[in-house]
Image 1 (cartoon, rainbow, N blue to C red):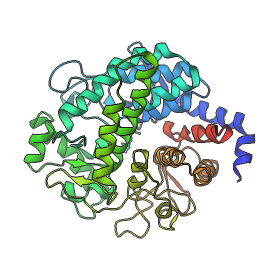
Image 2 (image 1 turned 90 degrees about the vertical axis):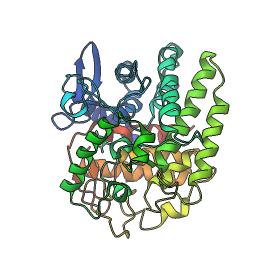
Image 3 (image 1 turned 60 degrees about the vertical axis):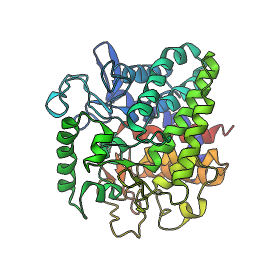
Length: 397
Ligand code: GLC
């Protein structure tokens, strides 16, 4: 369907997205947030909530702000990990058995909160909200520098695949000691790794030296650079210290390390993994150019782009969790990178096909790139992120 038909149906899209998000909302502990999907994902997840806020801003700015406030409420206050924002907040207090903390996990997720806060501000002009969030956002980036920038070179490592948000991606097989694993084997390995993290107090340097999973992900690092750019814009609006030099340093480090190959880097030996994935396109959030030819090749541009693993890779599987499906949150990141690089036609095409996919199938968690079949919960909150792409196409300025 041409984008104009979707634009003409803007009220219908708002209604559909609002319905999904509102039915997944929950109030707990004096805060309200949106569950990624009731029953399956009851807790609050970090990057999901960022995507929720970016969608909410188009019809419920109050909820967009509350979603991010709830996220900040579980920021770690003391100890070695002070400043970290956990990838899962357990508002029901059931996290103890897995994490040793009732209220939160002990790892993080892609840092997109300043990006989301900036976009909420862009819609509302509410600079008090930026003032409210700023100290916590700054402390979060300080935490990254202290705990995850292992060599002080501007790159940050993750210590668990869950931190990437791409849980079972082939990107992590080798570093997890797996070879073409079944869904169950891969899941068990991720759960087992939590025990190791707890034994090492989540200290990334010790974990790296012990041979545990420790990787510099290409997209995570680009997202962090982009988040710092947005934080520097926030700082400028509220009159805080200039963060632009800090952003530039990180951006230069990210581009220097990843642009030559576009893959993740093993922290143990500093070498690229050379496992190709759609994460290379997210690098464009920080890089000087967008690898457009690579994106538009058939292997990454089937009927419903963008499969997270290229379709000709030996470990590609469009029907299995994170092995090559389409995730609309990843599409939004690539869409945003395309717009940063002044590629409006391809951005528009990606927005159109993402909207077509939801139209054909619904707000599933993830999708088959060839057939459009939906997998996981059918009312997944973050799939409403297509609304933001539509809004941008609506008012391309
Ligand atoms: C899955 C995804 C992760 C997401 C979470 C909640 O674990 O892999 O990225 O944050 O679900 O939707």
